[in-house]
Amino acid sequence: EADIYQTPRYLVIGTGKKITLECSQTMGHDKMYWYQQDPGMELHLIHYSYGVNSTEKGDLSSESTVSRIRTEHFPLTLESARPSHTSQYLCASSGRGTGELFFGEGSRLTVL
Amino acid sequence: KNQVEQSPQSLIILEGKNCTLQCNYTVSPFSNLRWYKQDTGRGPVSLTIMTFSENTKSNGRYTATLDADTKQSSLHITASQLSDSASYICVVSDRGSTLGRLYFGRGTQLTVWP
Image: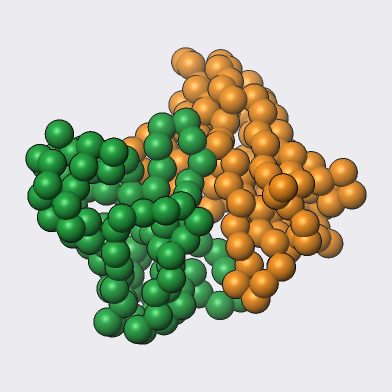
């Protein structure tokens, strides 16, 4: 079982609120990722990091920001949430070798 | 354009029956192909990873095949169980960069009925 944790699992907030989705892994992985997934659709990469103080935007344009101050921690922040941000957000990490991805359980965000 | 297409989009089978899910890709260059299982409301979990030189790989009742020439993969599930109900996602990695970009399919939603 993967040691990668996301909180909160579910969040319902009003438009304009600031939110932070937490992601932590205890596997010592350098690479971490945030994906966005809507029902019946493929996962879209929104942010990734290859190590401390390294963050990059992914393929899907996102108004969120991330930080990587510690290896094990990769939080995602939305400064002002909108209904269009309603989605499932999946955090993942990978080590060296095959680069197998380990996913967290996801954070389902609903913005009213 | 690099793409991963999965079929069928959804599938319903009876418990105990076998089934095969398909994945076609146009990703080039190719590094590896992965199958993930995603239960409703959960994160995906890896089932198999296959590189260019591997034709088949098994994980319990799950057997994945890869034909790198035709760029096709299949996931065969034997003696299905109710717990196999999930979305099965095919993911292809390129080696166009040292970072190995991933291309995701939309998944096949499998439902196993008792």
